[in-house]
Image 1 (cartoon, rainbow, N blue to C red):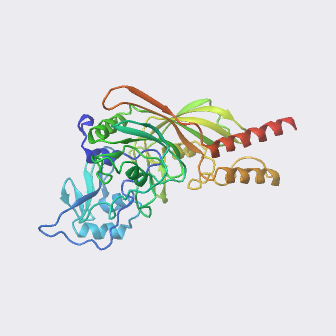
Image 2 (image 1 turned 180 degrees about the vertical axis):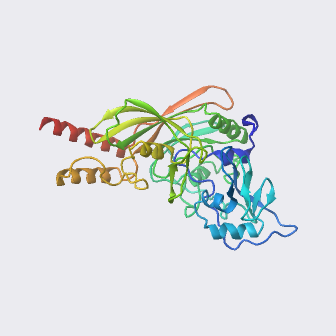
Length: 371
């Protein structure tokens, strides 16, 4: 695929930013009907198979990538002609090959419910006629998907833009350029025009954007700085998790990190994304033995380092209460303005929960050292 000639659908297919929602989170494969001669089809999922992918049944391949679909439902969709390889319907037994274009089409639009404007507060860091940058709080889902069709950042943006006649919240050619997880806080850029979204999307694809995160991780990170490289894909043992997979599987991913502050049992690090894969920082830091603090999906909500004293356990549990989510914040975001060409950089200070969490650890270490 020529990276310089990305279509909007291709951009949508690769956009799976750190902690982002899976591109197929909203799929419902129940009760699919065979295609009629005049049926209208909508693409719900699209992926270009990796160059190193070993041949694999397409139902197994899709099962590893679609969060909310069982293998039986995928097979049913294939029988109805909804699973395609290179534009042609295939059966479940079809073996995917490197660079195959696998799509899943349905006889209805991708989202059953249209995006409704909702009066949800937005922390807007910057705005002009072409784009805006928002600071998302932890706890806010970014995009409507399975189980979260309302109360999302996209609903809030639709409300903010409801009086702009050229902005359609249901048009995939405008809106979110990248995503972060519900329980990750920090900066996101939103495109107001199709040209702006295409331009910004290409910047993310070509890795020319600048993104830095702050994360508190379990354990004392030995090296002051380092790089984690490891392909990321769905964890075969737990489909709700991502994992570092063997060469030839998953998607290429690179995370650079730098130690900012040490607290003995936990470490504050800065992470710089070279790629943007789902849960990338969370997976890469776990891979090197440093799960994010209070990341319940990857085991960080347990006490992984420290003493067995009851006082220490109470201290950590109090820390969990102070910051009741993974301690991860998208702190800086930089890109080239899609119209003016100006280099733009934005910074979001640590939110109150992470600030309080770090202060509590500083106090703990200080008092411990005085003993």
